Length: 327
Image (cartoon, rainbow, N blue to C red; front, side, top):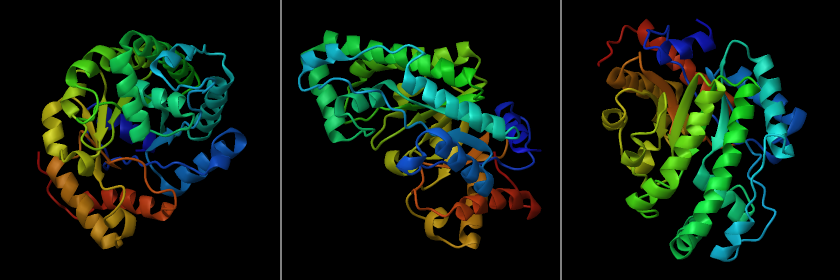
């Protein structure tokens, strides 16, 4: 099997020749856009041999305003598919897809809450300031912030549609706002989930073959996302304390993506033997048919690409060593 066939076998519930892998990292700023972004992605995909080729998205929501108070959210704009930052990202996707025909390609879409944080802070970051300012503003001026969220969601639909149109097989939707110490269950259900789901539906309507739902940040409450339409689920095991097997109970129909710590452990600092041993144990627990090996979140930017290639090699040796899988 080639990389693309391997991923789609798992998505179809078929037996792959080995467990596919999907790892990603943020690249340096000079590789955010244009030719350098394309070259950096291709080099990463070639040297790591990751089966899922996730195209990073550093074209964050524009900040053409200054949000200091809840009333300032009315300044948030809707952008159509012709916006420069949307077409710039679509062009990178188009060029990368053309050069990796044997792989499953995925476009990165920052969710509604993450994008709101970007436009609030004016930088591609989601920190305590971005989180709690949103909360305060939403609770003091719910209609104004809700209207801004809807504008952001409509723009994200345009980004998603153009990304799929550019050739991406699937979409990686980074859903934030599910943290237990942030929005309440009621706030999430009323203001966030419907818009997240609208963007995800736009991916399918545009022809996306699959959607990866990434549920990020510490204290994330996975139950808030269990009704989201998606094909693959990924979350921070270490941050949330929810194991792959426990997560599978919440998402019984989805492919699991993850397994490895993205900050510490064998993938980051261990020997090949230690990494192979951990990966074999993970595969034995979750099985091969509905699993893609990955990590909790993005990998450190300075991680050697060869270490990621080691993970793919360890997946290949699982059956060679005659280990029995469970489940």
